[in-house]
Amino acid sequence: MSLSKRAFSESAEPYPIASMTEHDLLEVVEIEESSGLSRWGWAAYYAELQSSNRGLMYVAHVARPLEQQNTENLAGYIVARVSGGELHINNVAVRNDYRRRGIGIRLLNRILEEGKRFEATAAFLEVRAGNSVARALYERCGFAVIASRPNYYSEPMEDALLMNAKLDR
Ligand SMILES: CC(C)(COP(=O)(O)OP(=O)(O)OC[C@H]1O[C@@H](n2cnc3c(N)ncnc32)[C@H](O)[C@@H]1OP(=O)(O)O)[C@@H](O)C(=O)NCCC(=O)NCCS
Image 1 (spheres, rainbow, N blue to C red):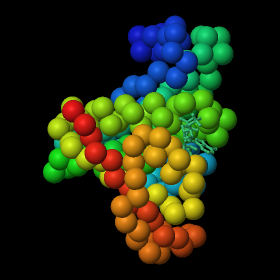
Image 2 (cartoon, rainbow, N blue to C red):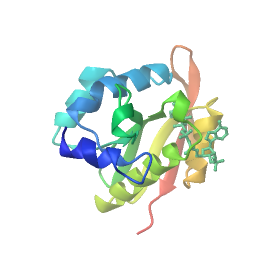
Image 3 (cartoon, rainbow, N blue to C red):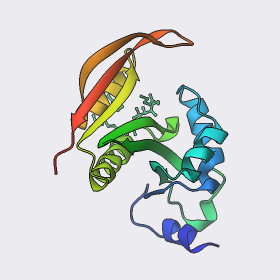
Image 4 (spheres, protein in one colour):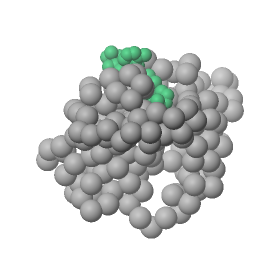
């Protein structure tokens, strides 16, 4: 067993957050597909992981006793990028069975902290206008709607709301 797997299985934190690795990608794509997000797919996550850009990619692990470990080791993930002093949050999702346990908010807060470390002063994201759950999460983390992009999303077509948060030092 790898050291990191042992560390997770013994962690007091039920959903420890760690940097995403190549080994996480199959599960990340599975979570993406079951969460109704716009599709990135394995190749796009892999390219982002390999990129020398300031990609920020984290996963929340499910810390289980060793005897209960199975193929479902991730509860959620978040992907963002820093560019020109701005943190752009691209994707965040939590497995259906693990929602409403504070995992989404921890992933988001972690990425906001990391964005500050990379000297971002503001964070931006787009969300489907009808995704009231995600909007509530973002508002909890200090985001506010600053603009709307009509018919931005397809399948189904829907407006996007652009949300922004100031990152205080
Ligand atoms: C959005 C999502 C990531 C939230 O993850 P989560 O782990 O369930 O969220 P948390 O438990 O951390 O909730 C944090 C806050 O978000 C809001 N929230 C979360 N789920 C909610 C729900 N079903 N209804 C209303 N508010 C909700 C609440 O303000 C909540 O705080 P509270 O529990 O103290 O009331 C998750 O629902 C998800 O994966 N959705 C599908 C993918 C998606 O829409 N991603 C965003 C794309 S822009």
